[in-house]
Length: 379
Image 1 (cartoon, helix red, strand yellow):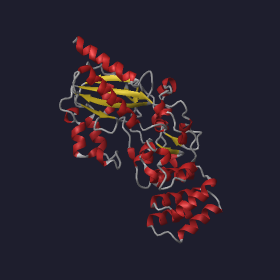
Image 2: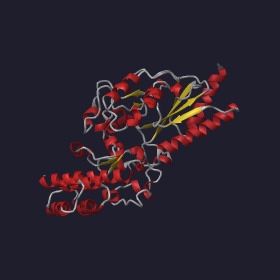
Image 3: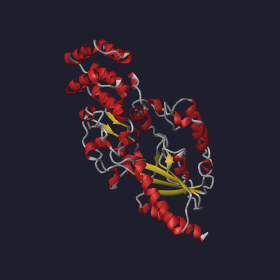
Image 4: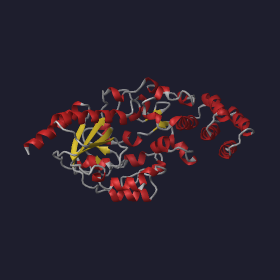
């Protein structure tokens, strides 16, 4: 027992040394919320993320031991990510980007740190340790694991909330074939009667069972949605180019306790410190990755980023963007970009925007883009 306690203490200390703010341990028991997850899928609330509903994914999520049969312990780690300069995530910024995405891609950062931790554990034990590392992309219900490991509770906004740190936390897990002493489950729900996150959500995507309808979530729409964004949801996106922090920004636990981190990995890269709409409207097919390599903003690719920037420009009724939008409508190779450019021009009052739409109407051959042009001209 003393060896177990000492090894557990050692692992936690090393994880903290590597930059993890929170470290907890739980057992590899099947998740108690799996039925909620299945119902969420059955209702189609996962949108087009069909990989979540595959038979293999469901089988693995139902029991961590299907991932690593030898698993005896699950290490759950949390890292604060709110940067020192989060001006690009505030409502006054012309373009808002979710705070977690301003620095380096956390999937890479956290995985590298956990791989270092595994090497340290193996050196301590003088033997290989079977393990699996995940940073929200794996087949785990990670927020339940975090609550079981004592790190906080699952809030009404679906985020894990820590009572002294709030919810600006990135989670990562390691399945281990060694025994560690589990932490007590976090037993409290401290959201109480508060509904600020639900009330503040522009699209009403937060559901009563502490899940959300991804099809209406701004984060999903600007990151995971690969096609056109629903016409009726474009206005609600406001100036969010990538992701959304609204349900966290209004949370009393964040307003009271959330603090920025000094971790260099999560500080804004130069391109994202003071972003402008034009910076993203002008991304070119051959060079768009250069300022974003290694950033979470690579995920939507150029098509998604330019589409999102077009929506931001349209919502801002940005007359200075008319020439760029007109060029995108006339000559961009992506029909989705041309379609959204037509919509944005239709949101901007004045003869110049209407003339750009009329000029494109004669040459456009894609029926979806034609439909957007006609609708914009009518409105």
